Length: 273
Image 1 (cartoon, rainbow, N blue to C red):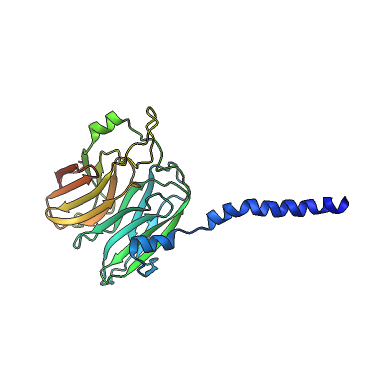
Image 2: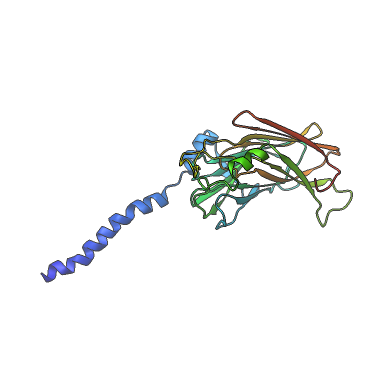
């Protein structure tokens, strides 16, 4: 009897190990190698610590609107340029959140937006350079449920705002009059439904409906283009820094998954638009 009792703690410990194993297995699972194959065709990806930076809060206040900033880090003497930046939220249902194409003459150095994060996850920023090489940086975010979180606006209000665009310019405190560096923001009224949100009245899932293309120009010169997915938050908001070519007009065109096309343009010299 004493021998049996002595064996109980050992048995319990072993049983506990068996129960804990699935949790550890799930935690240890790394989707990134599969995403490299699916999104980047298994191309080699180099360390991007000196090429591309990614900033997100370690613990998100709201998983449906998590801020993310992508920042280019190439040295001024580097002859290469960044052609595109792909934002990958590893554990989201659709991991590729957005791909940003940078205009060849715009010298975009920073892009900020808001994303949905569905699970505790690594988030990667992958830059493709003009020499064809890929470079990645990553960060870790604690957030959950962002892709299934209910919309902040009801369907009627969202429909009224559908496709409405706002453009803003920002003056930097250290900016000198001769500086050509500009900071601007585009906001688009759109529910950007993920397809994982439930209608609280019908208890049915709301079909995916989101902005999947956005293009921005200064006059006829491309500044930035985005291919978006379900991870971009409601009312897409893109803030970016670029170099002005002296253009007087800024243009935007967005398309969504239902085929709607939204266009607008603004005078660049008018602040606060």
